[in-house]
Length: 287
Image (cartoon, rainbow, N blue to C red; front, side):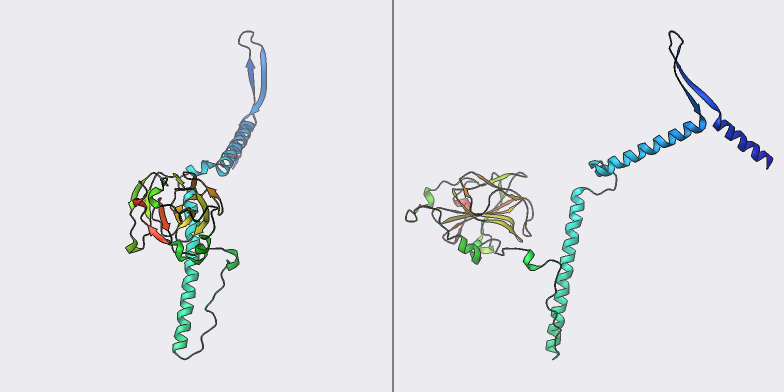
């Protein structure tokens, strides 16, 4: 016991022993600066500075983009994908729950029982909070709302009818044709693959009759032109014009993208309609 106490006293004495740090002028050997130190004080100051440095480094990483470089930390696009996946899973669960309730009600009716009044289940999103315009992804003219919109006047003389062979069409986007027009399989347009973030241009002067989001074809824009022509541009990543805007031929109207459930990659789905009939764009435009 006495040996241990002697060791402790010896350690404490060493920790509390005072030293002096002196800086001399090398020429005059005059003392310029001095400071009293001890092992305990040096250890305390070093520990405090280390803790402050560690705290500042953690704060810097947590509040800046440096955290993206931490191994195992998910990138921003991965976190966004996780959020979207969680929302889709939640929607699928609601759909499956409604389907099961529907089948249970049908089974009850077939069995002669009275079904429970639970065919319709409220979700967290109210119907009046979401606005969607539903229409066929390849035929705007099958949609009643857009059919009414195509009747608006462009301020031109309707008696002056132009022949399609007399019209010079502006190329909507420079790219490669990936899927051709085929009315037999309800593909009423031409798919064009181009550079990422490429701009899409109006083929003729006209007025925007629809500019918005649809579930199947993402961001879509429709333009009504002279000679009873309407052009459609689908799966865009961004729309540059609004409904009612007047556009000129060759004016940028959208950015190419891959939005909508029916898109399999970045491209432009372009349609050309005349008097309600779908035309093959490659017969009138040299892509």
